[in-house]
Length: 271
Ligand code: NAI
Image (cartoon, rainbow, N blue to C red; front, top):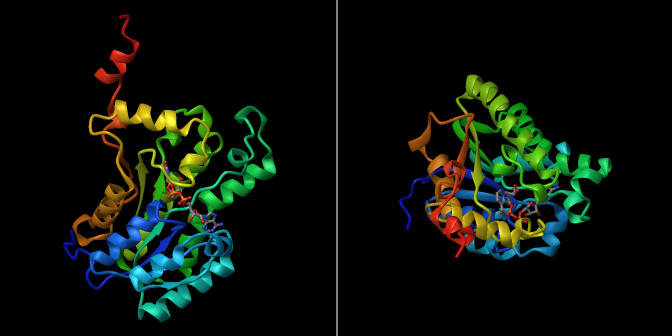
């Protein structure tokens, strides 16, 4: 259901790979709410994924950008402003990848070249994106920027591996850059800490099915879906949340505040 919360706003959505991607749902929901958007992803993802189908549905342009490349990011912001006809009102950073996770390296046996690559893609890319936009004066006053995070930044989930540090860095960038961008242009920057969600990135983590089910049983409202995450993003892009900034916002059905649930007690109760 659309409330036209983003009517007249212009946005850039990073990270829609296929129809399971959280960014895919955010793109659809943004357009349903009246926004004009540009879609972007790494060149390889444009070849392998189905982003072209999404672009048709959203009547939007795709501009390739490797989020670790400042040249690509500078080009993305310049071209997006030309295409959309002005400065950008909102951005979603929905990018994550750990080479150590992909190669199944244990946390006690990390490869540091892999670690640096994953850190660059998953976390430093957020700073690069913000710095590029800042220098090009690409974001409107009172613009809103969101990156997606996970609670492994605060608590240990052993198989989340070095992505835990990547998310901690990402959340810290939102606070630090949020200060500077808030002071200069009233731009707000937040991270959303999302429930486990069945996507390509999510299901790459060992034991993902088990911790998806565990989180679902622990959370009083159950896991938050990607569709619900998209709706939450729209509220944060909208003018109804103008003074929310530098926050890590849990969108997890109550998981982060729950110690134990009756469903889990029942599993461990001696019969
Ligand atoms: P996804 O696999 O659909 O999205 C990840 C995206 O990152 C892909 O579109 C991929 O092409 C893009 N990407 C990778 N390297 C890139 C690069 N160098 N430049 C530009 N883009 C690049 O998976 P999902 O789950 O939608 O992930 C989106 C975000 O949500 C990630 O930050 C992820 O960590 C976060 N998240 C996911 C959860 C889950 O359980 N799926 C839970 C909490 C957060």
